[in-house]
Amino acid sequence: MSASFSLGSRGRFWLVTLAAALGMATTAALGHWQWQRAAEKEALAADLAARSLQAPLAGQGLSEALSPAAPDDAGRYLYRSVRLQGRWLPEYTVYLDNRQMHAHAGFFVVTPLQLAQDRSVVLVQRGWAPRNFRQRAALPPVDTPSGEVEVNGHLATEVTPIFALGSDQEGQGFLRIRQNLTLDAFRAETGLVLASLVVVQDGPPSEGLLRQWPPPNTGVQKNYGYVFQWFALCGLISGLYVWFQFVRPRRRRA
Image 1 (cartoon, one colour):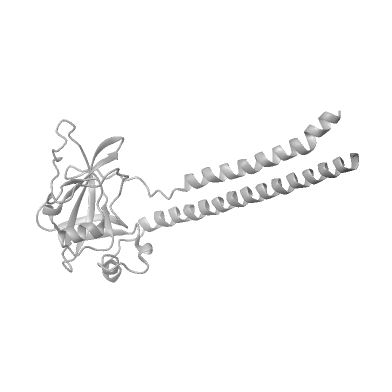
Image 2: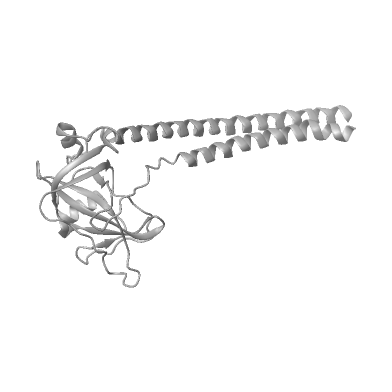
């Protein structure tokens, strides 16, 4: 009877040991993977910051970045500076609702720009304007110059989106105030031959718009949160294993 009980205790000890080892190995591996992902995103953020300091794209590089057909290596153009000449198409201006700047709610104003050099069209996120909360349908006073203008900005994959519970109503004509705007949908709606990338306009406030954009968010803080979570869980499994397999039995025997 004693031998049988001893064998059962020994088997239980090794079963718990195996389970603890698997748990620690898994959580440690997941923590290490998240650590690598964080390092990759930090490298990406550094690369984007370096791109913003490069000379503005020009010539063939600019034409390729703003072509209607997305280039295979579109990622290398992101956050590159551009300097464009063209004229605004104000009849297609859109006001994206529920956007914030300096903790105030308002609109992101988006207007297509028809380029002077090849007559192609690029969508420009021009800036932020406050909202009139007494008259929610009122549009902010934004100046859109006529004639040829120069726009300085950087390239992005899309107009800054937000999470929206519903979709904008369709079948009501051209909507000035919207929640979100995608290139494909806007291209189909307007018939404009839009570039595959958009431009986020930079510079000091002008035309009734602010342009103090936040730096690109790569989500690295979320990865570091996961790193802490997995390594903490690994440490917890290790601590529980030592307590229940060694410390607690010794204290009982003592």
